[in-house]
Image 1: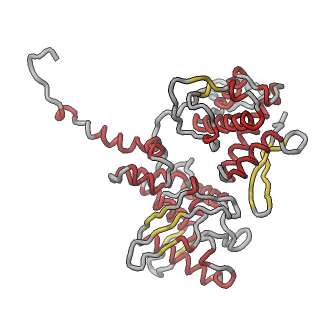
Image 2 (image 1 turned 90 degrees about the vertical axis):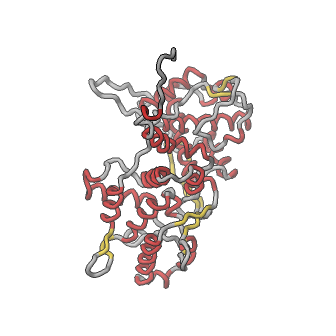
Image 3 (image 1 turned 180 degrees about the vertical axis):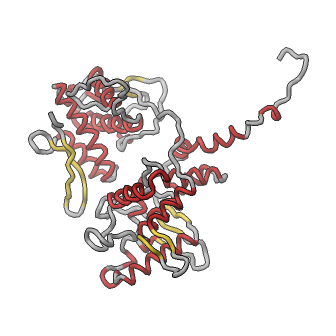
Length: 400
């Protein structure tokens, strides 16, 4: 039996959003009401709404197979739902035991994100309609527990002294995945490289610029693809920089997370690469068809509508191509977000203060930076203790 609640992409005018369809192919009303509140309140980007909608589709699929009304969920069944999230099992399907098969277990961060979506959904319906499920899923707490995963509706939560009955772990503390310098160079060169004899670029210069920008600025993929030419400020004798500008009009729903404007200073090398790409656009006649100054930097050149803004899916397709070309020279599971992790880790290893890295990455607070990258400075400090005997003085004859 297939899922009874299905995620559905919706275009409302020029705006992209998401909803959940039930078995009758109509929007599931409790979910749609909640998502509409999020859209109107502007508390979440389209990609966050997609994440919440996907999480709630999974919840309603579970409720349908458990034959439980959405407004009748209790602690026991919610615990079973979280267990299914962790195991990766499909509601209503029993996995046959296979020796050595651990199943498709989900990362705890994924579980935490989905649980946060469910919690926000029920808090909304408690405030809006008096549905009491949320009160069953919380209990009194003597202290406020801070979590790295804060829902988009955290500001509507009532009662600072309540905590969720189901805990989600922050993870196993392992470092975030990063590239080596050689791996970054291999990825960039696979996209395009400069011919030393002719002085011309060979390959897809646009794709090299995408990955080079991610590697040097630490921007998120959505922020990178949302850049306009007016956001790219050439040095002209000073240090060039990019402006990360919050906007709500990207045709693919890309936004600056947390809605914070910031400057990101870049190298002369990246500025030259951008200039080469810009001249390629001009030579291809782009200036005659669009207003380059206010248009997006990264556009379609060969597939799709010519000069239309690139989709994230186009970048992921390029990732797959690069993986196929480079094989074992790069990690098989790498994604564009690895450039952000690599950038932040390199800055901290170079001695850059965490609060400066926080501002460059656009994190909401310093704790997010420390949660993700604190291992970098901690590891460096621990290495300094390798010769621990030279740091300690042992006295003789004492009792300790």
